[in-house]
Image 1 (cartoon, rainbow, N blue to C red):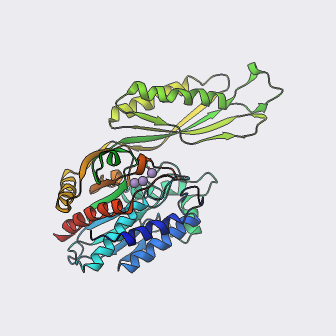
Image 2: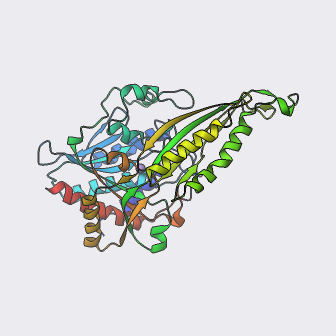
Image 3: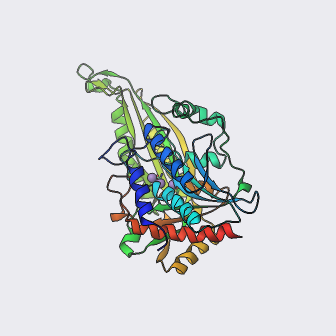
Length: 408
Ligand code: HGY
Ligand code: MN
Ligand code: MN
Ligand code: MN
C-alpha cells in the first residue's frame, strides 16, 4: 500500500470539522463560513504538495502540477466539497481527499508528468443552497452563463455573486474550461449503496450513471383563519400539495425499471399553526437509467398537478436541473480495471443511481468514476462511513490510472 492512510485520515477528519451542525452530521453549504474553512484547508494542503492554486469565477478550487509538455491538456482528479444538510463526512470529500493524496504521491515519488495534473474541489454539487445541483461542474462545462449565475439566489434572496464576495471570491473570473485544456477527469466517490460491502469488493468501476431531473413545484391557495373559515370555503395549498405528493411514488412504481421520485424539500407559507396555508413549495427529484422514463414521469407529474388546479388552487412547475443518463468512456473504464488488476484490488463494474460531477464533465472530456464501499450502504446522513483502508485502495487505483494518463 503506497497511499498514506495517515494523511487520508487527517484530511477526512479535518474537513469533517467544518460543519454548521456539529454532532449532527456535515452541513457545509456553498460559500458559507464552513465552506471558507474547508476551502482554506484544501488550498493549504494543495500548496503543501507543490501545486499552484487558483479559484475560478464560481469558487471551484484548482491545484496544478505543471507537466513537462508545455500546454498539454491536464488530467484532473477530484470531486465536490459541499454537502447535503446533516449529511456525512465522505460524500464529495472522499474524492477531494483522493486528489490531495495523489498530489502527495506525485510529490513523494518525484513524478514529472508529461501532462499537467490538476486536483479539483468543486462547489454546490448537492444544490443544497442554490437548488438544482452539479453547479461547479456545470460551470466548467459551460452550461452556466454569467447571467444565469447572477439569477441564482438562495432562500434568503442572496445571489451567487453576492455570496461569493462575502467570502472573498471573485465572481468576475472565468469558469468555463476550453475542453482542449482537459485530457481526462477522474473521480473517486463513495458508493452510497450496499453492493460493494455486501459483495466484499473494494472498488466499483462505474460504467453508467442515472439520468435525473429536479422540478420546483409551487402550489398557491388562499390564506385564512383556521377557526372561522368553513371547510367548504377553503383553498388550502398544503392539503392540495399533500395529495399530490402522496401520489408521486405510485407514478414511479408504475413507470418501473428502477425509476424513482423523491420529494426531499418542502416549505409551507405562512407556516402558522392557526393559518390556512396559502403557498407550498416542494422539490421533485426524478431519476431513471432510461431517458424515456424520466420524460414520461415528468409529464405524468405535471398532468397530475394540473388536475388539482381548481377552487383557487394554482400550480407552477419549473425544471431546475436536467441530466441525461450517461455511459462513461470505455477506454478510461478499461484503464481503471487494469489498475485494479495490477494492484490486485477486487472490483466490479457498476451503474450509479446517484448523480456525480463526472456525469457533467463527461460532456467535455473523457471521465472515469470509481466507488469505494459505504458502510451499510448509508449516505446523505451522519451515519455515512467508509474505512480509511478502503479509501486508500481507491486512491491507489486512481493514482496508477493518473500516472498512465499523465505519462504519454
Ligand atoms: O443527488 C445526488 O445523486 C448527488 O448526491 N448529488
Ligand atoms: Mn450527495
Ligand atoms: Mn457526491
Ligand atoms: Mn459528485
